[in-house]
Image 1: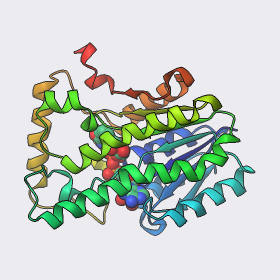
Image 2 (image 1 turned 135 degrees about the vertical axis):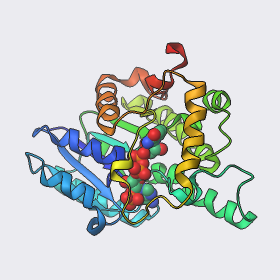
Image 3 (image 1 turned 180 degrees about the horizontal axis):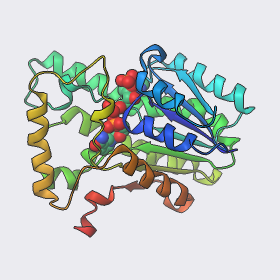
Amino acid sequence: MPSYAIIGGSRGIGLEFVRQLALSGDNTVFVTVRNKQKCTHLQDTINKLPHKNVHVLEADVVDKQAIKNAAAEVSRITGGSLDVLIYNAARLEFENILRGLLDYDSEEQLDEEFVQSLKVNVLGPIHTVNTFLPLLRKGAVKKIIIIGSEGGERDFVRRVHLSETAAYGITKAAENMVATKYAAELESEGFTVVSVSPGLVDVSSTYSELEPPPEGSVPKFKVIAKKFYDAFPKTRSLTPREAVERLLVYIESIGPADSGSFKPSLEFDTSTQ
Ligand SMILES: NC(=O)c1ccc[n+]([C@@H]2O[C@H](COP(=O)([O-])OP(=O)(O)OC[C@H]3O[C@@H](n4cnc5c(N)ncnc54)[C@H](OP(=O)(O)O)[C@@H]3O)[C@@H](O)[C@H]2O)c1
């Protein structure tokens, strides 16, 4: 009965992890969301699943007590263990995601966005891993997966000339290092800790109803997409289903020898371009 916890699975790639993992009745799937009442995409998905093996827990990753409560609930249900932790949450809200370092209206606005991004993309995985570690230590699989991004990789950002997404990219770079630090920390205990990119994934079918794309953001996204395609002409955006199918094959395949690595998406793997 492998158990999985998806941190941040109300929509997008996290939601698709929940769907695909829950298709196997052998799996027990925990998913954390910020607001249970407002997770319509997740609820619709759960209603269509063949098994009752998904547990929805409420936790904003910036709320350390909420993460502790979620871990306590996982422990209560599994008898104290967890096999695989997938940290998927990221600060990706439309208002700020596209801004480069020169695009903020004020220093205060820049500081605020960086602090919030750091809390979700860097301190979030740290507090989550620290809190769930006693459960993971008692698990049979001992895998910690951080969903990373090429947006935090220097060679990719240089090749794409990606000045946009500054707070996101800089904190995702730090998040990759979080995985590597835990890999070193937990090496002697047989853990596998990796950061892996899903690639360019079109998650628009499950956009938050609370935060629709603001006026003008879609053309800006198109500018960034053009930079991707210019730098990586063979790239195409994946559906969440395709991306998560690949990610689950990868997660299944890895072991302690892979620990500490960042796995780029095949779409952006320069060795294949
Ligand atoms: N899509 C891509 O092309 C792409 C490319 C590279 C990497 N990634 C990575 O893939 C992961 C998922 O991205 P996505 O495209 O699926 O994004 P998405 O559709 O915007 O989903 C983001 C998820 O993070 C959750 N979240 C945000 N802030 C949170 C917080 N403070 N506490 C708890 N949960 C929070 C959101 O929950 P709410 O519903 O409550 O907002 C939502 O479930 C991210 O780590 C991202 O960096 C995505």
